[in-house]
Length: 410
Image (cartoon, rainbow, N blue to C red; front, top):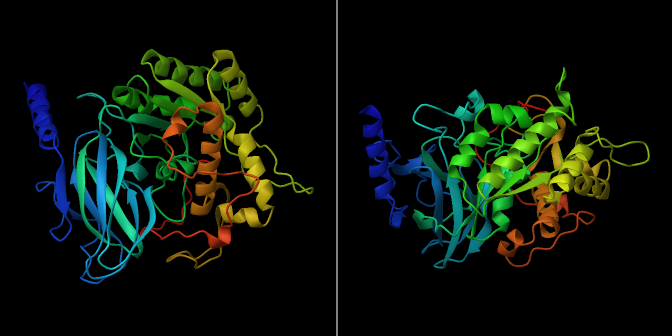
């Protein structure tokens, strides 16, 4: 009886979002679980303020089409929109005084619930982010963030969902200055694609499965969806019988492939991004041992697409050079951010600039490996890892949250 009551309550919630709902941001009422929507995290901005703000809506798991109406009758705007944990969905968009521009995108939202009795084993740090809660959160940021209103509606069933499975180089990093390619890639695609980022820092292929992350993704997956799989950083540190590139790693990757195929989805293997490790000749070194080769072999054996991100990022880092490539990683002197009393020097985890470049590398690999998916790229995409964007001209508006502790994994 209790399970039937819970199911009925969930159905009632789902009915409330079956049709498009418009939220006017002139209503400055804060979010409460009972109200189900409102300004969240920070107070609603004061009139004329250029500070970032957040708005949350309580919705069930699924994909949602959001259409934001950016602009202001009385002032010019410069607005960047992110969803959930800093997932980039609208890059900096400028509006003149009195001008309004609509932008649509898809946001995937989920909770840890797999069944009424089973949940994903999320980590304590994830409980502090917006990734696994019961609401969909939008962040409006920029030099002068302006949003009059937005419309939310369930995404059309034709929307392709791309499930991201990986570690700290893929996850939606919730705090500055850490970032990943998985939270940058949505901005390059139209509203015909949803990115469901299930990655988490510190995970290897087998621990990802063991935590129930794959099992949860499978409950949301349908035929025609994609599953992008990048592991290796943490797998290579596992020791003991049955461990290694050609043993447990291979077995776990095969599990992802088989489970995706069983639902009619398309698995895509991605070799691990290189760490920043230059030799005396200016060449970046592979630090992942046999793991990239093992993944390449498996992709060939199973006849599935492979994005060789290990090779693509080698080209990227060498194009930047030993010193300039620090810009792609979390290298910041002390006091760059509030409360940062020591230097940050991390050669595994990306800065926002680096994450943005690596996302472009992934898309470059997609164009070769799964070109049908890239038919949904926004117009004008062009990129060569050997000719990366200039880090000095890269713009990024900081989110209000900073953590000097590096993510799990290396």
